Length: 165
Image (tube, rainbow, N blue to C red; front, side, top):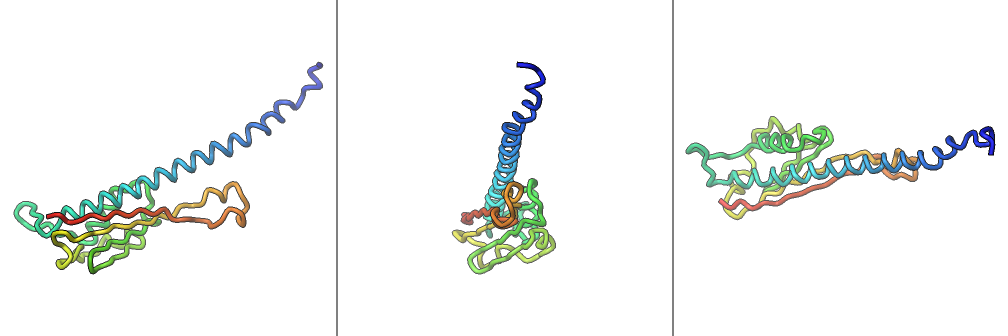
């Protein structure tokens, strides 16, 4: 077979193998990033709920009480979710009688209200931290907008802890 009759084989082989390989590798990379963001969200909610539960009414720090404000809790959550964009992260703090929503989480940094409040901050009361994080739909890269679904979707994580002291 002459060299002239084999011209263009490389281009055809790349088209048949390279383009699907690039799509698969992009999909794997985007899925990995989304899993990392979900892990950060779940870790942040879990550690924040523990943090709040450990600062119950009987908590003493240097001989003084260690009540938390909503701003303390929001800052603690943000410091444990470094992979997440705070402007796309929404957090809801819930105790027995109070629910506080931080949409986005940075809106609550200056809130000085006590959380949980004095009535809910006692032995065997539960605190719940719920967080949502808006993620861009990776299907929009590969499919037409009508077939890919919504432009964004929410990752969701929640953690409930009981105040034990």
